[in-house]
Length: 254
Image (cartoon, rainbow, N blue to C red; front, side, top):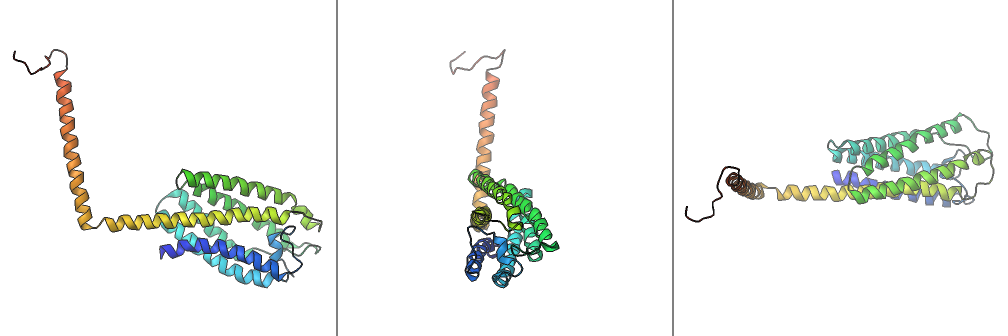
């Protein structure tokens, strides 16, 4: 069951990317280069019904993955923070208010769309930041590099945000936002792979730690302990023989 939950992280990332491609093709006049991802689910957009339907499935996958990460954490606080952040993103997903199409007067739902964005973005950064501290150096370096890319792409995307509301041209905003979201999705998939490998390693150790193997390990441990004690006694004797006021025994007759 644990592996299935963790594998949902890979499925989540792939399905989100597929949803983007599918909806961009449903809306024939849509431009992935100059329009945001949020416009695919905008009120009145031809692609909205498809986005919402696939998005609900994707939300379930993210929640399942969050549960899997929480279960694997087993008391590791940094990974628990990552799991909690992913679960929070999943819970907020279905309630994310949609924006209106460009050229339509903004209402409360447009404002709330921005509010939810302002909540989810820090949660993503929080999940990645604490996740980076949960594993080895390679994953940490990768996570930090991804964080930099995601933050930079997000900042450049937000610069053009007011132009979307004003129905002005936004060249490359779609590319920048997809770099931002894509970096996060790839990171989730990589985290899932890392956790799956770690789970396999745990199971291997558990299988190898059966009664016979455990007795063998215990015997070897006891032997090492005896040898360590003997070595310590020899060291103490040597030091005592070299102490002031004592004669070093050379093996010759007195």
